[in-house]
Structures are given as C-alpha cells and as structure tokens.
Amino acid sequence: NTSKETPYGTVEVRWKLEDAIFKMKIKIPVGSTASVKIPKGAERCKLNGKSFGSEESFVDVGSGEFEFICNLNL
Image 1 (cartoon, rainbow, N blue to C red):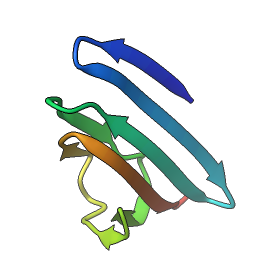
Image 2: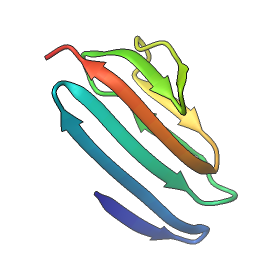
Image 3: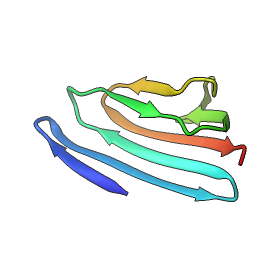
Image 4: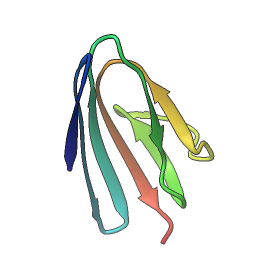
C-alpha cells in the first residue's frame, strides 16, 4: 500500500494477492489520469466489475476510484 501527494491531490494504491487472485484499489485525484500496470500472467481481469482484455499490459484510467481483480496464472 502506498500514497503520493501530487499537485492535484493524493494518489492511493492498495493491493493484495490471495490464492492467486490479485486485487488492487486505486484512487486518482480530479484532473489526473493514470496508466495502471497489469501483472504478467493475469487472466479474467475486471475493472469495477466489468471484464477487460487481460492481454493488455496497461490500462489507462481517469480520476476516481477503481478496483482491479485478476486471476494470476502463477
């Protein structure tokens, strides 16, 4: 878990790995965007409950709160 103050506000990241399920919650301040790195071996990924292609290495998001959940092929 970490956070970083920026000129636009605080960026926060919290993640955990349990039983090959990777969960990450991020918070991006208003007026900002982020490129989120998807772990290698990720499968059946969801962003805020909606599936997206796990073949992507990065996912771009705008401001707000997001939850990524992926099964990892370890």
